[in-house]
Length: 273
Ligand code: 8IG
Image (cartoon, rainbow, N blue to C red; front, side, top):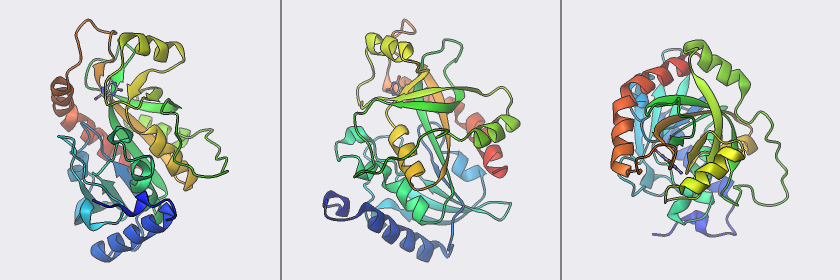
């Protein structure tokens, strides 16, 4: 299936603007305030944060690719929050490991920015390096290490990434749950999990969480002028940190178990933004 983003003569921001226009038309919401990407374990939050105004299938929007990963839903929802604000929930994350390049990976974020969102909430399931994080522990992302060897930014645009994961937003999250720990997220290409040696490398360079998303999206969000809040669900201890091997089925099960708890937490945070 062809995607307009595959044509390198096309400006990805134009496609994002087209998608945002369709979202505005279908939802009747001219400007969204907040956008959320809900990764493994976080999807239930969409039902808790407010009233769904419109549900749009990803294949109705230019530039979006239908996800093929079990447990990932490909819809975009416009939600009215109790405080009068509007949230856009992106259920259609494209991962870098899918092999379509970086443009589709950040298209949701760029569409959210074009739809007016000033705050981008990025959530994911991740492997934890800290042994104190039992499977199912939510963790605030304080910073990231982009280990993908690529960037969503095209051309000589030297975007500052200081305070990328805004302290202001982390403080709001902690005002909801003071026990929230934080850590540095390291994005690997995947789709394989790390070797134990790679996890030791990640630990040595200052990472606390390993995953396959979020960092590229956060960079694109900052390029578009958004404030970023990042939340990981540590669904498993990273390879070699515990004795047992990693299984995608077990990772999904840990996400499901934690889902009601962390989705309620996220809904409470969204209510305060
Ligand atoms: I859930 O241990 C989940 N996603 N790279 N490593 C990486 N991604 C993950 C992991 C993990 N767990």
